[in-house]
Length: 363
Ligand SMILES: Cc1cc2nc3c(=O)[nH]c(=O)nc-3n(C[C@H](O)[C@H](O)[C@H](O)COP(=O)(O)OP(=O)(O)OC[C@H]3O[C@@H](n4cnc5c(N)ncnc54)[C@H](O)[C@@H]3O)c2cc1C
Image (cartoon, rainbow, N blue to C red; front, top):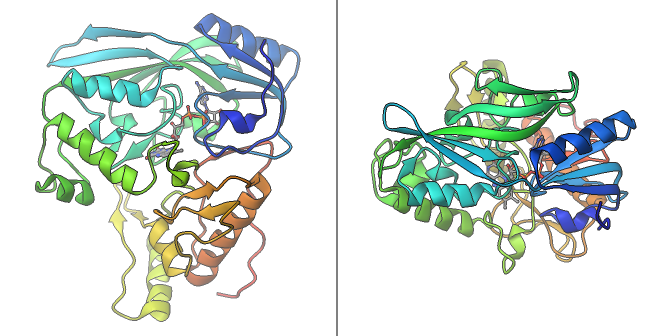
């Protein structure tokens, strides 16, 4: 056991009060033992790694925090020019991406610059610039707190979806111990499926580029949005995108189109990406901007929208979790009033819950 720092010191938002106790686990057996001990004692449990996707309450967390600090990578050759990497949960994600790009392994290059740990990648199926980690995950080794056993989930068992998985839907059940990825041995990237990235690389959408070029372009784009952790960039004191992009059925999207036309003019169409299940994904940043929330909106010394990207809420130094929730409510309420769309937060709330106040404006 180690001295318990406030959780603000362990999160990228630099928010969160004290924890009951903190256990740092450096080996898989230590993770399992710490979780079993907390469960046996009936203590609330928080599994924490990089702290880049959590909003911890100002009152903190009244239980055991198990910090995942396990390390190790095993590599094996597969058929069809593919390589399998079995990676311990506590390894850093971007260090792995950089190593893959350097070793000529394709499949994660567009996921460069995402903070956090390996073990968290399957939780919300991290994704960016047209790639999702679910495309390369082949297995997840986890401790199942219900059965008390260690199990291996296949990619299918993980039920990956946009920013979601079985782990995100059942947050108290599994502790991820190790993630296995299968990558292609190739100096070129996967086909680039994101227009902004293809433009930056000066290639056609769907074309490939050298892995190192894709990584460099992604990091450059991300830095421009404050989306790379950087002690010199106040806009990176965030949890990344605060809201997921809304996914609507046809009726919901038709209503959004109607409201957008009424508010912004008949020629204005909201962004729309048709999903494999026929639903339509639209852009949370577009909705927030069109609901009249500008970059920088908020408290310049506390919680404010990033000055580089409307989707990130940042702590300018003296912010509190309470203030962050208030600003998030204001933004989500404004989008709901303007467009009838409910924004859903992406980070996990710890020690408090996300509950939108009732609507004040009739549709
Ligand atoms: C600047 C910035 C940019 C970002 N950009 C992106 C992006 O482009 N795309 C994207 O998808 N995300 C992005 N994120 C969010 C975040 O980086 C990812 O979600 C990341 O995977 C979180 O990893 P972590 O180790 O920090 O998780 P933590 O914040 O420590 O934990 C997040 C959640 O996962 C759970 N968890 C963590 N490890 C385990 C484990 N081993 N077993 C079980 N549960 C676990 C925690 O209990 C918690 O519920 C960004 C964040 C920041 C700050």
